[in-house]
Image (cartoon, rainbow, N blue to C red):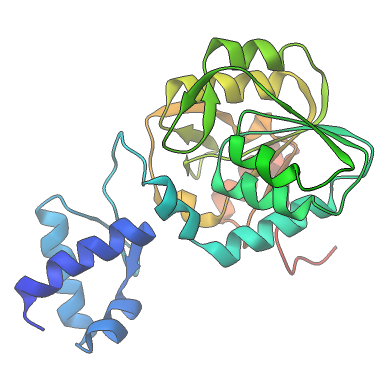
Length: 256
């Protein structure tokens, strides 16, 4: 395939998956790694992608990837994270689940739990958990964000402030290696901050691809989190931040 045809397809793949790898593109197009690296460098020079080790990601932006695309992104990692997180949630407790495709995966893993009181500003989470008659579901008020079924704004915050949860389960759009937790929507971030204040324990569910993305609004720090559930070990810098703040890191296959 000619370079002029490869480049638009590479951009399309990056928009769909959030990132592309040299290895994956070599297999997809049947060309040499040197050819793909040259394509990625040119796309980066033109501002279409940002180069990372072994591939490229969408450039930093104030706009998130579409929700339907995010649902398909890193599916196996989300399932692993969700299963591990749900194993750490006992029956007969209260919890908050916020907006996000990984928190939706957690909701699916809670379908066999019982005695839960779940409050959420995620209509998708509420619909998932409505299938479990042994879980009470409360949906916050708020302005409906049609793109992802999220409820945000003052009414959502006011609902959360009426509770003191055993657990809060939040996601994010991006992470930095120095511990910053980031998102795109200032109203959603305000809700996340309120969740953190009203929970005895806060769980962050985020796969390690979030370290390759950027977002403009600060939710908080890993220092605000009790347990960080991810799909694989984090790098030494992030682990050091977590260790310094007594934030536990849990990932599949981890030895006790």
